Length: 332
Ligand code: UDP
Image (cartoon, rainbow, N blue to C red; front, side, top):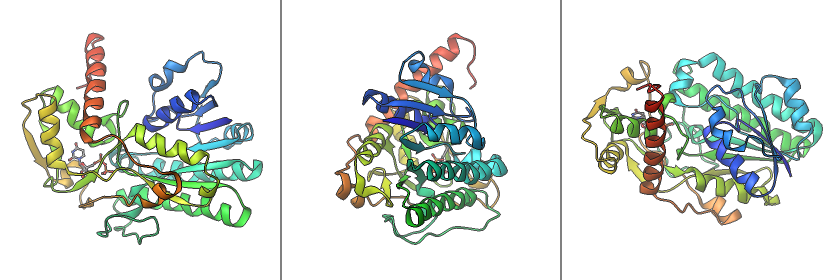
């Protein structure tokens, strides 16, 4: 297949690209390099079945040309990361709503199948864990920037499902829970690479809030397994799937485990949310996916545990930090 991956130079996108190429597909990426990097896909430079277009999903003409040339679109291009959204509220809304509209309009015009990448932020701060795909959502006020991301992604999902229902466009929605692994960076707020960098650099490990909030982290390779399985599942069209892991850990436990595995003596400190993000910031106390649906459809089951994730991130961050240090570019 000829596959267009928007956001293909991002953390998750680049892992999807690796696997698509390995499976023999032709891949074009469209990425504006806002949070993605050339290095994430540099190992494919010169490959015959790989093409990179560095432009924005807001550029509707480029989107239309690339969608027309594709048999399948994986739409991952988005403004992501709680910190990034809070710092760039206007740009984030535009990219996350208008960008997806562009992709869906072109897919509709050219009858191209789309997998829309959505997020567990959709469920907001609902206390009803584990979250089922058809569960109610609970969001805070519009003034709190965090909720704008959930809202934008909900608009994307609603649009995608409406194209499916009204025009018969094959659209699948996947809601990714906290995804981690090599190539993820802490700069936009993601907790595991942040803690790992702090531990390696012997800096304080900053736990936001009281650290009792929990997350279920899933290795990016497991997430890609789930996505690849859906590619060959026709019954998945018009459906929404959670993808993630069940292994729940509190953020304070996570900080301790990172410190142990890196053999660091970094102090673990608590930072109030209002200081870490913005006044009035709200966090969810638990976030756990219900994974029964994707298991029923394609037999999905994550294979890697938290320690596997941490080892892979620690190895990766050590390599990156060592080479930055050698080049005198350590941004610590
Ligand atoms: N977090 C933290 N310290 C950090 C970054 C994040 O304690 O340096 C917390 C954050 O407040 C949240 C959890 O770790 O409770 C996961 O944060 P992340 O931004 O990775 O993902 P989220 O689940 O919030 O989308």
